[in-house]
Amino acid sequence: MFHKLVMITFLTYYVNAEDNILEDRRLDFLGLAKKYGLLCEAHEVITEDDYILKIFHIPGDKTRPVLLVHGIIDTGDAFIIRGNSSLTVALVRKGYDVWIGNTRGNEYSRRHQRLNPDVDKEYWNFSFHEIGVWDLASKIDYVLNKTGQIQISFIGHSQATTAFFALASIRPVYNKKIKIFIALAPIAFLHHLDSSPMREGLLAWPYINYFFTKINKEEILGKKSLEKYVFKLLCSQKNAYEWCVKGLMMPINGYDLQEMEPEFWYVLLGHYPSATSLKSLSHYQQIWTKRKFCQMDYNEYRNLALYNSSEPPDYDLSKVTTKVALVAAPNDRMSRIEGVKYLKQFLPNVVDFIVLGHKTANHLDFTYGKHMHLYLFPHIMKLLEKYI
Ligand SMILES: *[C@@H]1O[C@H](CO)[C@@H](O)[C@H](O)[C@H]1NC(C)=O
Ligand SMILES: *[C@@H]1O[C@H](CO)[C@@H](O)[C@H](O)[C@H]1NC(C)=O
Ligand SMILES: *[C@@H]1O[C@H](CO)[C@@H](O)[C@H](O)[C@H]1NC(C)=O
Ligand SMILES: *[C@@H]1O[C@H](CO)[C@@H](O)[C@H](O)[C@H]1NC(C)=O
Image 1 (cartoon, rainbow, N blue to C red):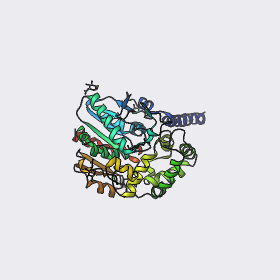
Image 2 (cartoon, rainbow, N blue to C red; image 1 turned 60 degrees about the vertical axis):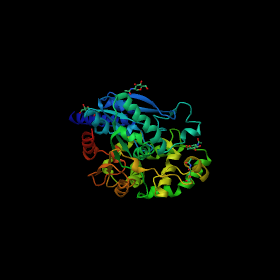
Image 3 (spheres, helix red, strand yellow; image 1 turned 180 degrees about the vertical axis):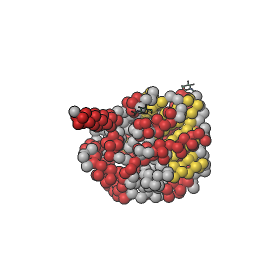
Image 4 (tube, rainbow, N blue to C red; image 1 turned 120 degrees about the vertical axis):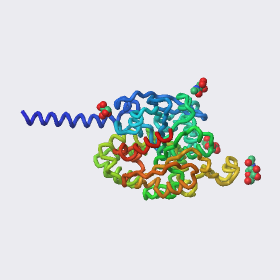
């Protein structure tokens, strides 16, 4: 009898735990928000170039709006997938009015007023440049309009930082709309990166790009794409943690197994990776090759037409006059501390430069790490309170 009871208790516990995990893998942003007790609404933001973006809003104190934007091949889910230990929940508990963006091309924002992403190549004609100059600008204006404020706080991860640096240098009026820009794993220059799979990929990029262009592929990691199918198939196998996490994700982003436990990997697979454009990757590849933070390099003829110069112009970082807090992770192989220090000298208004205390913290821990409520969120809360 006793054995049976123990067995039943154990099984119930095990099955429930399993259900709980499986559920988070399957739930979308609104589903996760509901599960973790947040009242969330979805809004549509239309950019000046007619992209239709989804932005999530968890209402709080309207005088303290915070906008969160995710990195490349990611979605707004990044900020809620850790549930009760996620940044979204932490900010809501502190009373902030929280807005979570989705960049063009990802599963929530794969829409346009005129263009069809499935047919029109033009839809995929974007990189972090357009994600900054159009998407971020429209999101910032939308939040300002809805809250009636003149400034918001902005938190970006990885590509969202590149996009914001582009926006603030090309359209400097946006500097005035931001109280504080908290740049997590900031990237403007890429030549300090130290990740061998990434370097191999970047070296091979001209060939990969040529091949994809030949087969008319503009969207990468789309819902029905072969590369996504293969990734999901391989990375949800029994040994996936060995192959995909230890063998691929960690070599690219930095080793930190502590912060990405096996159960979480299977949850994450329901949300990551998401789609982006081939051009996004090409623009980053150029920045890495050129060791410069500059606009997209086309052929000489088009460069002349677009920029009145045969070389693409650098983004003028001296125009990024908003208050910037740079947050780096000691074991981040993409946005290395060295690289962030290099970037810092070009920025005129850096108010803080934080290196996370967790020695093995990597590029993805900012959004996906298990203990960011201990290592990262206290820094964010302090910055938001200080620059209110
Ligand atoms: C999240 O935390 C809240 C408050 O501590 C708790 O009531 C709730 O049960 C937790 N939700 C989940 C799904 O763990
Ligand atoms: C893509 O955008 C660039 C720069 O704005 C432009 O020169 C080019 O014609 C566009 N290409 C397509 C296929 O729309
Ligand atoms: C927000 O935008 C609408 C439509 O353009 C406008 O009528 C309204 O006055 C704006 N609200 C604020 C607070 O700026
Ligand atoms: C283009 O560049 C040339 C040489 O730098 C300069 O003389 C000219 O004024 C520029 N034209 C425009 C339209 O900016």
